[in-house]
Image 1 (cartoon, one colour):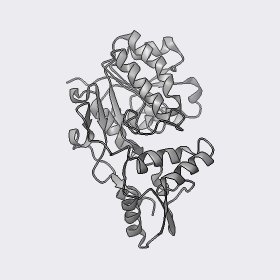
Image 2: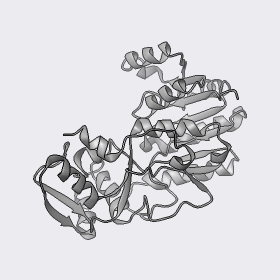
Image 3: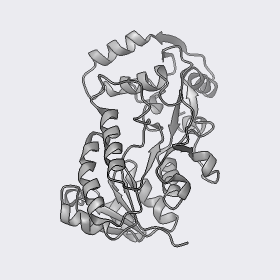
Image 4: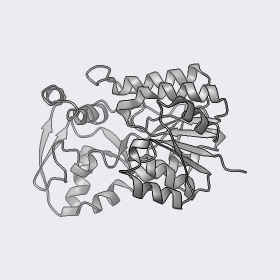
Length: 304
């Protein structure tokens, strides 16, 4: 079967460049929408794209005519813009609807399922904006796949979920809540591999793809235990109550306090794992057992 042509928006970002690389590696004709302003700073990356056969298209979400022209060249649009710009996808949805040729749209989510999170306030609409984009996609009748990968390994895991630290602690560690609630971490390049696997798969059309890979679903107590085994040392554990987490959120300036929102959502409310996958969703590792991924333990080995 002929591979779908894929347009990646946000192609030079943290996840975007992995999406481009995997798309090319899996044989998809691959296009990247590039803002003029990013060209000087990302010249080396863009050169690697070109050398790999990626077609670079100049434009932006605010440049409607170039955006339409880019979309008309492809079958699938994947958006990987930063979450703080989530609502800018309204412009993209309008263009996709007008172009009328897109067989699948994968919006910029790549986190906890915004329809499942149990926190509704004090979150700067981080999840609400993503849910709003979902509703617009569905109302417009645009074919979609949503990717719920929960945490990237590059978020919180490098510090062993210790806000303010850049490396894992070797003496004392904070445990948020009782330490038994499980969260999910997936490496960015692995998220890209699962994402690109969905684009021509009818099983994922108009579904949420949930990533909960074995070895990547872990509580804080389990995470600390893995780290202790690797460094050969027991850490002093300080348990932080739910009330203390909320207080830390209130006392920490934005955007640094987003770490506490993520911790509260995942490790106290259990927003990554409290629910079973419903018929509206599918499991990534079950659908794509061939996709190799980095486990939490393997990632922590790189931090020793």
